[in-house]
Image 1 (cartoon, helix red, strand yellow):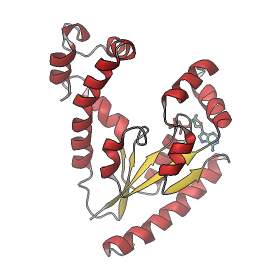
Image 2 (cartoon, helix red, strand yellow; image 1 turned 45 degrees about the vertical axis):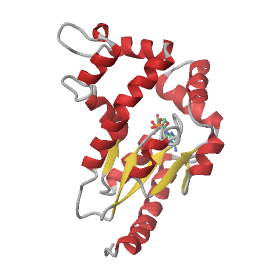
Image 3 (cartoon, rainbow, N blue to C red; image 1 turned 60 degrees about the horizontal axis):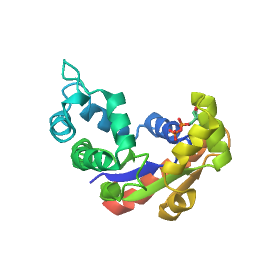
Image 4 (cartoon, protein in one colour; image 1 turned 135 degrees about the horizontal axis):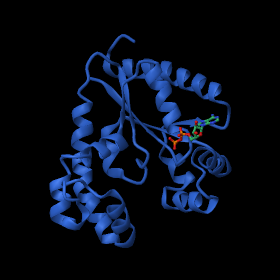
Length: 206
Ligand code: ADP
């Protein structure tokens, strides 16, 4: 049995950076956003249901999903957002479960940015690891990465779980206020901790 850690955190907290460190250490990492994108890519498994539930106008002549039109619809109509999530969540869950059937590892990581907001995904992991930074650091890092206006960044942050709620749900917290090298060091320590912890769990030799 392979155990799974749910990696989460707000926008700009450093999840992708932490996930890349786990990959460098040889840990299998499943990216839930990539799973979601693959389901809505050309010929993706979610497209027939999305077309049926939300309409042909979201598709071009070649049958490709018009992502901007879908984003706009979901932004304007909360009901459409709910319909979309009802289609996507079971498919994402099934695809992640499929990808979790790796063997020969003590543990793996599932990177789920909106894990705290979507309890439907809690059953996928044994433990929750929250990457945490102050809101000021969050805004600064997203600004440097994307050039988005501060107001827009704050609007996205307001649509996500509150820092307090994320920390309450966490089994482990990775504070990412330091340098990238410090983050890498913390991930290495966590890696050794998880190897020991999950070996006890499963009886594997780390
Ligand atoms: P998330 O995936 O949580 O949105 P990222 O991992 O993309 O966040 O990090 C956001 C930005 O901040 C990226 O440009 C990343 O390189 C940078 N970053 C992350 N951690 C650190 C750090 N400890 N020091 C400096 N920059 C960082």
